[in-house]
Length: 243
Image (cartoon, rainbow, N blue to C red; front, side, top):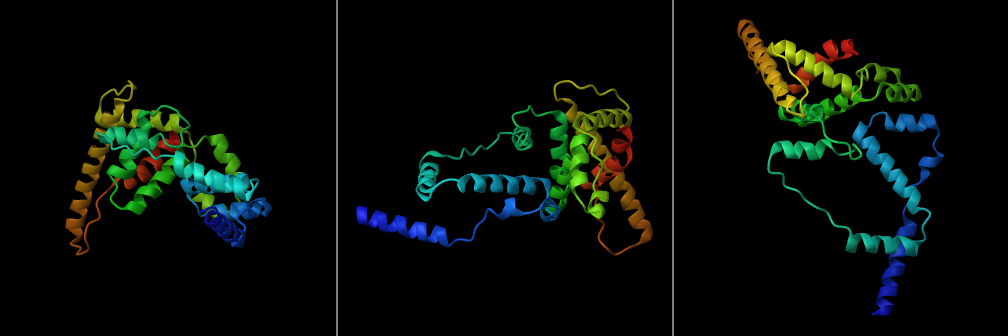
C-alpha cells in the first residue's frame, strides 16, 4: 500500500511539473495588465486578482506542501448551502458578498430589484449590475483606475462614479417627487417605497410604448421597458446631476 501511495505521489508530481507556469502575471508591464483586464467585468477582475494572488502564494510552497494543502481542503473545508425563506434574505446574502462584512443597506436591495427582478435577459442583468457598481464606486478610486487605463473609448462609455451614498440620496429624492410623498431613510424600509416607484415608472413607460407601437402599426414584437432601461434613464439624468 505504501508503494502504491508513493507511485501515486510520483505520478501527481510529474503531472504537476508538466503543467505550464501560471505565475507570469508578475512579469507583465502595467500597460499589459491594464489591456488584459479591460474587457473583464468588475466581478471577473476580482476573481482573476484572487487567482493570481493564490497562485503566487502557492508558488512559494514545495510540491509536498501543496499536496498537504490539497488534502486539508478536501477533508476539512466544507461548503454551507443556504436556501433562504424569502427573496429579501436572498438579496441580503448576495449583495453582501465582497462588502467585507459591511451591513447591507436599502440601496443594495434596490440594486437587486433593478438589475435582476425587473430585467428579463440574463446578459442585461449582469451588464446593468456592473454599470451600477461602476456608478457606485468611490470617485477617488474611479479616478485613479481611469488614469491607469489607457483605453479612452472604454472610459467614455462608463458611467461617472458618484458613490453609494449619492445614489441612495438621489433615489430618495426622485422617489419622493414621483410618488408625491416624503420618503425617509428608516432602517431599510424605504426599499419598499423605491420598488413602488420603480413599478410605477415601468407601468407608465410600458403604457406609453404600447400607444406608440399601436400608432406605428408595426409588426415587430414590442420590447417592454425594464429595469435596465430605468437605470439608464435615471443614471443619465438625476444621479450624475446630483453628484
